[in-house]
Length: 384
Image (cartoon, rainbow, N blue to C red):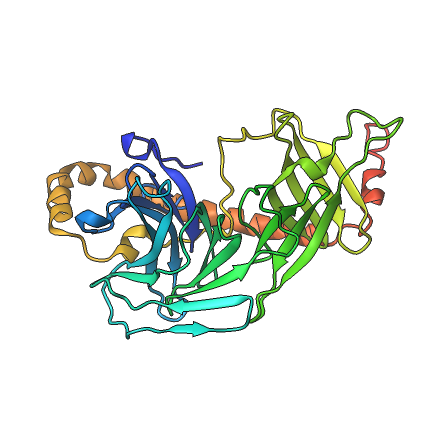
């Protein structure tokens, strides 16, 4: 386990992850963030976006990498002054890490009905550029997903998912499933099988939807949990899981595993559904293994790498160079320890990845019917 300690990280919150690098941001420091690779010891980098005085009301919403250019960019929102409409979002911007590149003048393009793409006019100079300035007002989730060159954001007020192509700097607006009801808030975007997914709740049932990898961006329903109507003889230890929010979801060889949290009771549940037979099984998680609701974040799409945050930021500024020169003698004393940890860190990371792939192959060979596994007798000293 690795951690970041110190006053710099005290109020940092998880935003997203890209190529093994975790993005942490502080809502009170609108133009500052930390890039951190947990797989490499002592490998974090603080980044400050150079904004003008009128842009201090910014929020950092994501980190992404272009599939073609391999350029890393930060996604930001620039919000209106606090006096206007409780601080809604005004426009989206990107900040290119490393060297700046020229971009052509843009235009607005209309695509199929459920999709709207706008290419920005890039009014901002240098590496900070506007990518979307229309129809962005309202609340946007502070967490995002990065998958294959796309940063996905959940626009709460517009009930839509915003998808930014990091290379093209275009934003696609994807409507939520028709069953989505604004009156019932959801936990945000999830990731399953390398695709974004969302939950919906309409007061009667809770469903899980997966975004298909097609041009029209359709939603495919993968699971539905219907409202459990009370009846005589119903056991009190069986909850109505349709009222539980979905905090995590995994596709384990055709069996969907949902980690659910019941807000009213504070209980945590594991719900498993066989995608082919639609048979379901649920169990309450013991308090000792259920994480505190506000004390963790799932890093969806995280894949351990040895990419250094400093390598993607680019050349250091003069102030940073002076600071490094002043602390060079301290780093020199720690160098033997650091080199030893850098050798052990990648080895441990590789062993973990190999072990997880081994477990996946075992899980794929398990019986399709979960009931067979549940009723399987346990070994005891006599039978073993």
